[in-house]
Length: 156
Image (cartoon, rainbow, N blue to C red; front, side, top):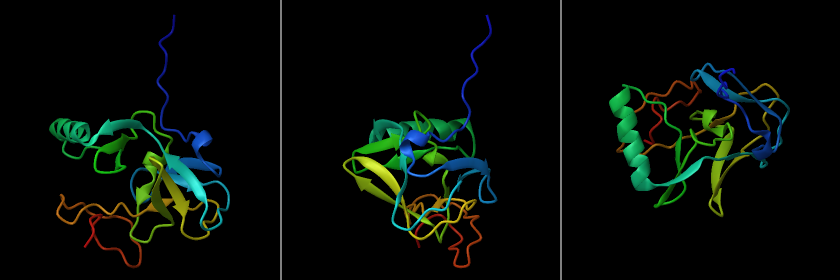
């Protein structure tokens, strides 16, 4: 009897409006790329994951910080009470990296987080979104290298 191999990072195309692929990113390790041209103002992918309370997300964040100095968390706030943890049941959208000049925007619609294109996205282009971390939160260095990079993932 062989051991069952856990699936690695992937894009769940059921939640994507266009063909997408994972690949090495110059921004941060792994990124999501358009496998075809994407017109502006279109749903590209839904961010999915385990729906947890804000309190539970803080517990997970604290636990992750205790384990390593730079935790990789995939938490996305829906509203004041709910958060999606993309590391559990994620669609692959959790691998979309931050950029100060993004080609996607996040929208919350009926409790769902949707990434929509801000402009035409060429096939092969990395998909990015502005994470807009709070000004008063821990400062996180930005590596997007965009022309108007803020130097931080946090809002200024």
